[in-house]
Image (cartoon, rainbow, N blue to C red):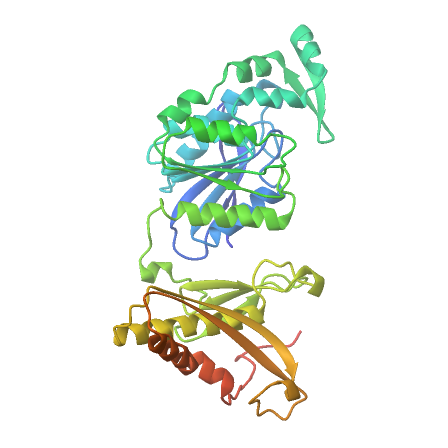
Length: 414
């Protein structure tokens, strides 16, 4: 994905370092990602979430707050309110570029900051928080026994994630006075709250308080076994998928022509391309609009982020069977209310497979269990079961197929 290194002016006039991750194709919308307390725009969660959104047509601006990462300014002079002001500066920068943000995403204290900033950003459509505290004062839990020293001496050096930071009394005063209640009441955008039940840094009760104080439309999604920083790539990618899918309901839709990726294959072509040389995950593009994922279990060298190729083959058989039964029932006016098809795949010895014509020692066997719902007679049920064998994918699997393979034009050797 294209990515621009940029700077824009923060709340105090200091240059803030940022990265704008752009989609390869048409722009569906723009998001801002606000990182966690004392983190940076380059933490794995931010990178994975930005990449996941950009792949779905959403540009993401992620930046370092004043005094953090590669941004200039003095961190000791910042506080929660200054973070909110930096977010408003980021939104203004994007608006000046003709890319006003429609989505805000905030992680941890950054999640509290996006809630606070959201009512001040015109045209905002959606806000997503990840592991966010309901009260900004929750950040003081990071300071432990140094709080008394900060209060008495005016400041103290606190070690966070192995790095020293100067925390001043003004910071404690600011987070103590800050509240999200008013901002949530004035929020005129959809809200998505993501939180891990086992988050040891910001407890799950914070998600309940945010969700309870917000107005509809609002949604909650659990992050299951994730830790606070979404340090596992699979958890960060899952969060990105959830945010992208959810926000699509609130961001402008693209036409079919706009939605087509410039790198997508033409209609009638399915392309599988690996996502990383050290894994097995594949992105599958079916024509110029539809995207799928294939992978293998971890025990086989994959990351288990998608169905296996055989799982997709079983899915094709099940889907085709259900479609065939629906079309037949529609044509014959059969009162079929719902159809579902379970498919399993295995390999059996030829001697155990009745009707198998293969000369091999083992044969692939797909077992279908068809679930029919409706006021159906025995004759109608039998007819539907029999028509399942006329599914085109069924016929392909049972028939003979030729596979031709050649190198793409211009393909070189490593």
